[in-house]
Length: 173
Image (cartoon, rainbow, N blue to C red; front, side):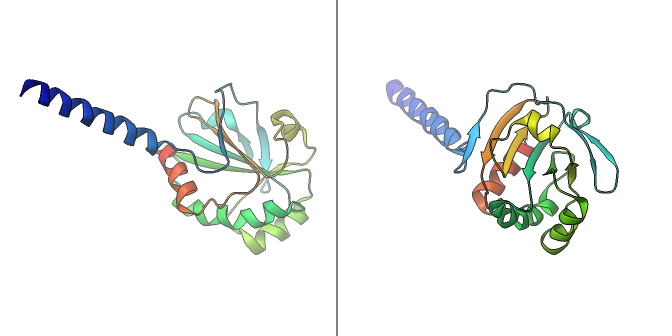
């Protein structure tokens, strides 16, 4: 009887470990990074307000690089607009960084597809250069300690369950 109890306990623990591993499965196209410190990021938004990544310690930040001329960025932006109301800014912040375009171009585009998003403007492309996203769109997930943990290269349907659940899971860690 004792050996059956040990076997049942062992099987139960194995099932628990396997189900926990499945819970952290990354959605398609999300890459795990090495946890190096995020590069400095200080920009102004379109309202002229300064934003500094170092002031976002204590919660996750989705740092998203994009441009209006980028087809996948154009397709993806409405999905970011859709998830914005579902994010608790005390747990997950969204930093949308436009790369080297004019405010007029960015304003016209966002007014039509994502009116609630206030982008950060990298007008000279220096922040983008420092982060080296290897193409647009690119989304980095910065952990509460300011370290790079995940990366998505290319457009993603952020408002679909696999991606939204991933984001909410990070925010609730």
